Image 1 (cartoon, rainbow, N blue to C red):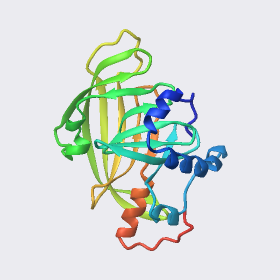
Image 2 (image 1 turned 90 degrees about the horizontal axis):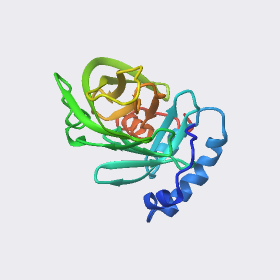
Image 3 (image 1 turned 120 degrees about the vertical axis):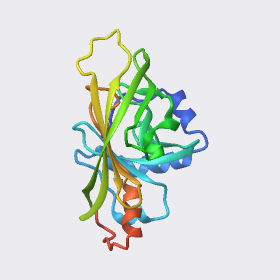
Length: 234
């Protein structure tokens, strides 16, 4: 599960303004999962109920944990866990984190992100990234490759997906020694609806992979396709 140093109280209060009740509900729900040494999971019935969205998050070789959608603000989805980690995504891409060992502090030019435009052919996307520890203003450029006719399995069902592999590279030099100049992110979109279902993202080269499964969206897609899933399936 994601378990790093806690956020400063003042930062947490800023994120949770007006959402204390919701956060308390998440905390109570996730305590058992966070105490487990195995991957956490929710039953299908919980995911299709009239509740906020959930996200599965797995950092490196740690057990998978559950995060809840705290709120949406200016197109940014803010996900929280019971141990005070916050992930901020735009169209599924991590653009900011809080509570990790090496937080991503800021991402620029997100409006031009091909994850939003849907155009991956002959596309190059540049932006500036700021990381914790004094690394600010690094220009990173991405190119994309698409694979069709891929499959993922959720709740025992094969789901057709479009796989997008993003190759990232630094466009600016660094005062620090770098062992890896390039790294990759992978995104899996539903082949028919284009909804992002799963991703593997690295905040920087050499960092552990953060696997995200947008499990509430997965459940919606299965339900909309008329696939019968048992309520206790996980």
